[in-house]
Image 1: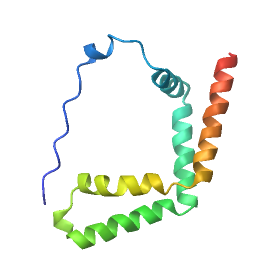
Image 2: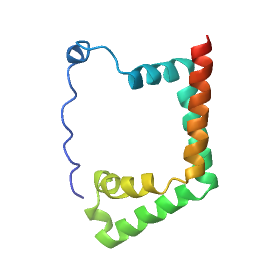
Image 3: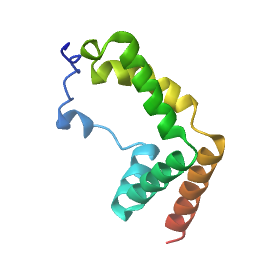
Length: 112
């Protein structure tokens, strides 16, 4: 079995405090603090299972592993090959539902 690809080092925490957080970072913090991020992740899991996306991704992983040989594939290889296909194949209805939930969360957070 091949070794996993080396990941770049994590930047020092000190470097991150030099600048103000971006709007995206602020929203992410609010989602985490409220517990909404976990609820959104669970909703996403449910929807992807319901529409067959998860089974489709499993089948792609199995096919790739079979083609390359089980001992010649790392998790990093699978992530590299499957991630673009997975992102591209999430149904628009699932994306729209999540986006609506995020918008509702932001609207209610702004009202408080």
